[in-house]
Length: 166
Image (cartoon, rainbow, N blue to C red):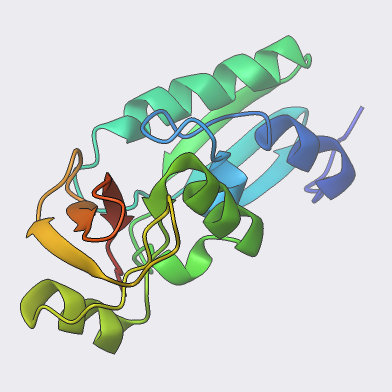
């Protein structure tokens, strides 16, 4: 029995790594960087999460999925939404970035490069199918607010690009 505040990384991280982002199921919420902290206080797991953007509809699902995963592991839990500091694409782990690419979503570029591709038509986003940078922006808005739609001029495949948020 835990009777004081403790960070239990070896116990909680493996549980939370099994919770997927509902919009990008190949990413765990840990790889996405939305989990700010998880501690056990008097036998209740308190998890703080930050949305990828204000009003993200996936946060309710993520909270429910966290509670379910922790309940399956024998824990009661409380979820708290933390808005400050705001989430940034810098919080996506290297493993998460690779999972995005493998899934067919181009990982976010740095802020200046991102502006160049979204506002100036620069060809910096690599095709997730063939790796070519001969890609063009189709729409600044993709399947979700955090993605843009691109198409490769070489292989002709469409793909999403995860926009940089800082």
